[in-house]
Image (tube, rainbow, N blue to C red; front, side, top):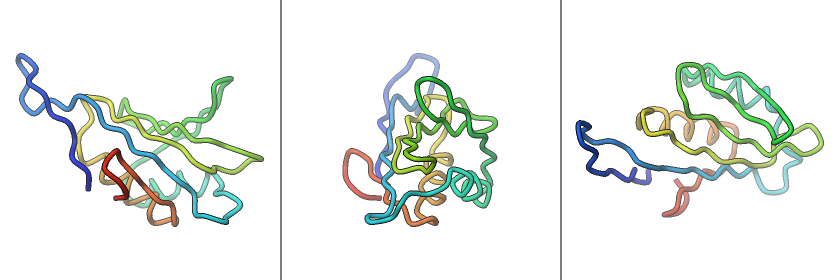
Length: 114
């Protein structure tokens, strides 16, 4: 798995500054229902709720500030990204990766495929 960027922040040890995952639906697939994505997250222990507004679709994960920004086309998810918020930990990155790979998606960071 890719490495989180760690910086020196006064009063904080191993403070994670930024991390982003790029989520890609299976090639040639019509997309994935967002309910299947929330079920995949639930299967790895992360409760998530779908929220949409004028800016797009989010999968908001209970207990975390991080959210998944999902591209929805014709009612199904076709891609997305995950920006990791500083106070959330590596556990969440690992679980998001596990959930999306379980439904056949590819997961990338800046260093390549995870």
